[in-house]
Amino acid sequence: MLKSVDGEMLNVPEHVAIILDGNGRWAKKRFRPRTFGHKKGAEVLEQICEDAWDIGIKYLTVYAFSTENWKRPQDEVDTLMDLFHHYLTDYLGRIMKNNMRIRFIGDRSGLSEKMQEEIYDLERESVYNTGLHFTIALNYGSRDEMVRAMKRMVRDGHHDPEEFTEEMFSAYLDTAEMPDPDLLIRTSGEERLSNYMLWQLAYSEFVFTPVLWPDFNREELINAIRIYTGRSRRYGGV
Ligand code: FPP
Image (cartoon, rainbow, N blue to C red; front, side, top):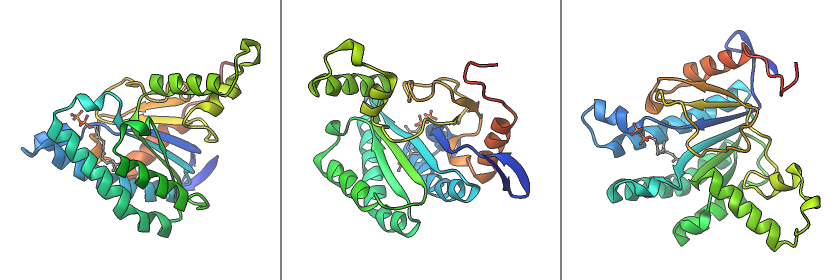
């Protein structure tokens, strides 16, 4: 939808998905441990949530921890889990103040019981909030999400192949009830999807920026929307 953003008319996407990348390199450039970059990345994310809503974005979905990220050194995994835990507990007050609705996608059964409870509480407490729909992908992998969805479909008694539709499958994904992303942004110069929302990103525009996630800001977000505004989406038509 065309909106005035800081005095400029832009086609503001309803749903933006972001692959947060480059925390480690950002810290390395400063001769600091990788975890320092993750902490800064978490602060930046909080600000971007506010900017996104202010700009007119309705859904923001970020890739925080993938099913493959467990392969990282144990101390980095521990720090990331601590950071998520801190974020989930500390953040509740601010989520309510900002009227944000929070959701999680990914395989929760692989997270600690404490974290599963925190996730459940956050989702429940914010369910009627009408501000930014903020979704965090934790222990998320798109192929894993699709396999879990298929298992649930079969368990629910959907055995007749003739009955299967795209809509039915979408409704079994972790993102059920969310619109597909219009725009995907990946920071840090990497240009791949890394098993992120493969089904949901089928028609999205991709913007890759060399900026490392901890350096990402409102200007960079607007710049990505400017690039998006310059593209026309045809969904396979002409
Ligand atoms: C990628 O950088 C980043 C991650 C795997 C973690 C993302 C986590 C945060 C930004 C923390 C905040 C998030 C929440 C939801 C509290 P990288 O480590 O792959 O960086 P590199 O590619 O430079 O090594």
